[in-house]
Image 1 (cartoon, one colour):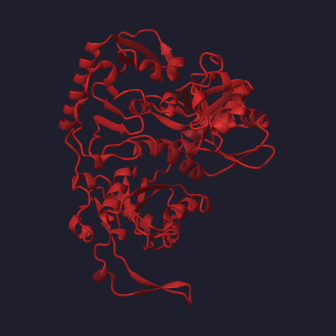
Image 2 (cartoon, rainbow, N blue to C red):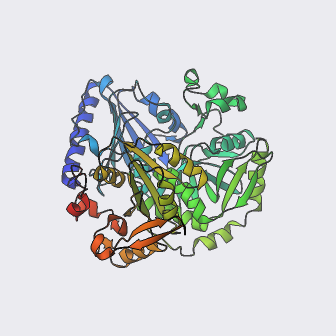
Image 3 (cartoon, rainbow, N blue to C red):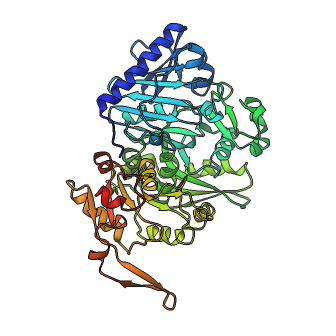
Length: 541
């Protein structure tokens, strides 16, 4: 059962990789470039010039003159151009996660992530404020890595400085800025570019940085926009700025806006509101109020599923933000020229900043983020009821993770349909059939929540179950697990309800679905034994 490596072991690996960077740098010419972000100074130390053209264009609007003592140094190198091989990874392949985390290799001091698509290793030592970025070679550098380079390392650095990378766009006027956030394909880029064309200020399209104190503010991070290939013709004024035009339509168009639009690229602005866009068939766009809970779900899901190490700190900041700033739905109409007018009018009508600040000083109730893991094997006929059961708990801080353990039914399509039918985002993963222990382990590794709960696809929770378990665990800091009982039931088609049978204290004394766990307990004890096809819960307990 995998447990985290001690921080000393993680630090030792960090320094072995750093030694390799120094070896690479000795083989080629060192190039240093400097950038300013959220009041901090960042040095990019390149071993040779190969990575410069891939990394720096998106950051060029933030470049500053040389700084004698930068706050953060990132050392960048590739093996091919420097003729320097990377040291072997000390972990097994099953420790990787989709968003880049490496199970057992993220301590408070050393952060480590590996991104398969660009084949990059990212490491951060928060004690020395030193980062490492390595790739084997740049031949397969994906388009999104050009649009938002060093995203993981900058996320860790910003988090240390009480700031947060957020997946979203930000545009504004002299009245302040709005954040546009939510899952991909809902119109963030269309809105941002329409507003830039109309003369509004532009802070970013893909990722921006947020800071709460001394006032809610948004900072520009990348000078790029990522536009769907079939939308390029809607914005002919940007066609000459597309970086990867020869690869369309297989890729999104990556647009570099600096230096051509440098006068509209604003480094930072006060943040006045959060808008969650959505494409509609309306002619004109419409902005309507929505709840902080809906906004938090939209913003947190899209951000936390992409950033390695994003967890309780990220969720708490986004919770504060969505609870204290005005939250709206932005129904995008077909008339693109109407979008900037809506934004300008909306910002003009917002209350004065002083009123917003007064609201921001009020305390916000916080809820621990709970990751609910559903392992599924051929459970398409049960999955909707299981998800309904989770949503009926009316708990505001949820992450639902479904792990398809090699199903042969139509589970993928059913889960995809649930996102539209129930307006819920489900993090969905697939693996070869390996048993429930392996499926649960996959969910644990991918989970962002402070707490973990399990619900088998053919199980249901009674009303109020999750809140009760969370309250018990939150009020008893010395506990790692709060355990209840499970009740056997049979569906009665005549009444449309379930009939209970048996004694739960005898039948299901250690039911996984009737408990809630601190995620940290799985780093103390280890994960479930994947060699066990049944009885893995008894073995773990």
